[in-house]
Image (cartoon, rainbow, N blue to C red; front, side, top):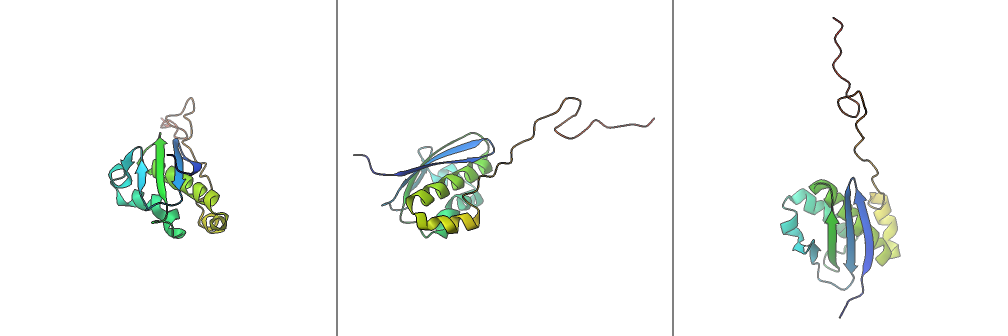
Length: 131
């Protein structure tokens, strides 16, 4: 039997997270079919994920199943935070102003700048010698 859930997508750099928020849960968070604590071993990244839940007092009230791909650990954690925030805003419209004020609903659009021809990196030019 399938449960009702709220769906949202979060993005950051090259990471994409799809979030399913189940309203009547016990606080279980599953990322790529693993518990959140075993997926993110660094406590700061786990904290990043829990930020919107703590801000809205929903840590123990909802269950989350998350699929995330692309990018690194921090980018994935921030993509998940974005997705959770969007799902919470869809779940309860009254939570939206609080999440918006904290900046969790805003997509961080910064990406890696491409390398340009004639340069060593995106902006770093070759060393110049006068003589």
